[in-house]
Structures are given as structure tokens and as C-alpha cells.
Amino acid sequence: MPINQGVGETIMVFYDTTYTLGDVKLMSLMSLITLPSILLGTAAAPFLTKLVGKKKTLLGLMIANLVISAIFWLVGYGSIPLVLLMGALQILCVGASFVVISSMTADTIEYGEWMTGQRNEGVITSTRTLITKAASALVGVAVAAVLTMTGYVPNVAQSAQTMGAFHFVVSFLPGIVMMIGAIPMFFYSLTEERHAQIMEELKERRAQKESDN
Image 1 (spheres, helix red, strand yellow):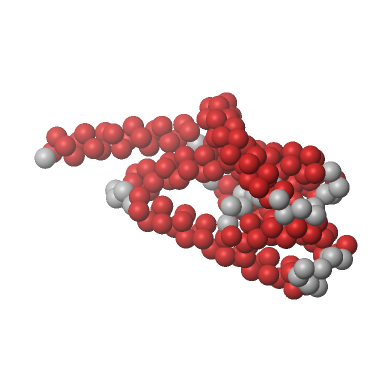
Image 2: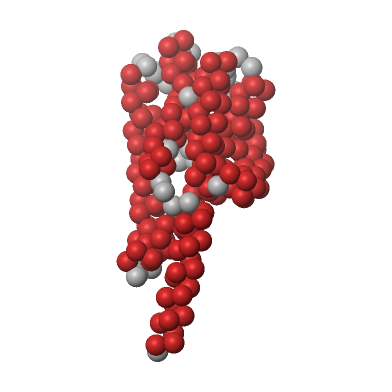
């Protein structure tokens, strides 16, 4: 069920399985479905990018994840098999998107080299890591805020409002956050064709530099 593998989301899933689904042991089952979902998403990503390109693939995965998340939220948490299925579909989308993002990050490194003449791989990779950590921290803050606003009291039966909030955070909210993260993609102009041209120019530059030396 979790979309985000950060600590905050994991904690929220713990609360959700304990109180909303009524069995914390389901957390282990949810972890069990994570690996095959990620593997399937990872395997599907190269096929999808070859078919429609990286930008369209990533946007499509993010939109699909939002739709799945909305359906997940609307159907509720009454059916555990359905909860597991929707969670697996979410993870599949995220697993595939991570592969596409990693590939696009590599493309931006080469684009930066083409623009500046310097290969700043460390800077770009570090920036991505920093953003990921910041997002995980925000998830933790959001979890704390949800627990406070819904009147959560540990080790007792939770109100319908609290359980509904738990379900919203693990079902719909990750899809919304992921879609917000997709906004910059609408301004992303580095197509596969343009990247191929850049690689050719970089190859020529490197060959020229070697001949000059």
C-alpha cells in the first residue's frame, strides 16, 4: 500500500493496518507484495519509454497513479484483498517511474555538460538526493499533523474520522503529492531526439579535444 518508502509513510501504514484494517500483521503482507510490484514496474519502464518516450511515460505513470489512488480512496478499506490490489498497482506505477526518473537524471547530466562544458554529475545527483530527503521529511511532518488534527489516541478504538484520515493519507494523498511533483515535467523539453543530437555533439567535442592534445 505505501507509495513512499520513507519513514513517515511507513509509520502511517503502521497506524492504518493497526486501527483501520484491524491487524498490524497485514503490514508484513503489504511489504511482501512490494518487491514483485517494483520488479514488474522496473521491467515495464524500458518498454514504455521506447514506445512513447520518457516524458510521456513519466507523466502517464503519475496520472495513472493518481487515478488508482483516487479509486483506492473511494472504495474504502472494507476489503483487504482490494486494499492489497490497489496498493500493488500504486507501487507498480512508482517503481516504473523511479526507473524513468533515473534515466532522465542521466540525460540532464549530459545536457548540463553540453551547455556548460563541465560534467557536474555529483551536483545533479546530490541535488536529487537532497530533494528526496526533503520530501521524506515533509511526509513525516504530514503524518504528525494528521495524528494531531484527527484526535488520535493510542491503544484505543479510533473514531471514524481518524480512520478515514488514515485511509486518505495512505491511499489518495501520495497520488496527489506525486502529481504535484509532475508539474515541472510539463516544462521539460529534452526529448529523445534532442538528447541524441546532444550526445553526438559531445562525442565530436571529445574527439576534437583528444586530437588537440
